[in-house]
Image (cartoon, rainbow, N blue to C red):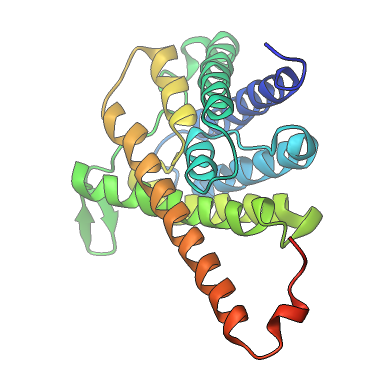
Length: 247
């Protein structure tokens, strides 16, 4: 392992481990069926955790802490395949480590360890809602699409400068506010698989792994397409060549 990649992989491991420990830990402590107040607490725990570690490690590794984000950045052409594979392995190991640490601390007090699950007979006013795997896949893919779009448009493109972690943390928060009661809203394979490995329960694991990846790839395609259209629009404007930075 080169000296250049080692700090990045360590940062991704620590950041993902802490994110799962705080996010899944809050979900485990708050428990199920706690209503809006519980979901708000869980949403802010995830959002603040990712924001803090993105600020801490953004300059080291980019602060992905999510295999779907790494796939999106790779698909957008902003990192190499080898580096992306290293990131994903570090994130997955970090997610499991965070969940195992959580299990050690909580013991049998929280059997689910914040593991995501599709809603079953969720009360919505006078009716109830059950999320099917197809619907759950769509929700998880959409939430990942939103997150990766923000990451690519702020941190990767450099448009938000030092405020990118704030935008990313806010995106996690509003994603979970909307989807938390429906799917658990991990939209992060490491966040989903960590508690699954720690509990030995792999219900709908395929959904929680593949849906965020699909959403991330679509986000990268849209991001790249919009960037290309913007450049073509600038080139078509009279005198735009003089305003464009030299390559």
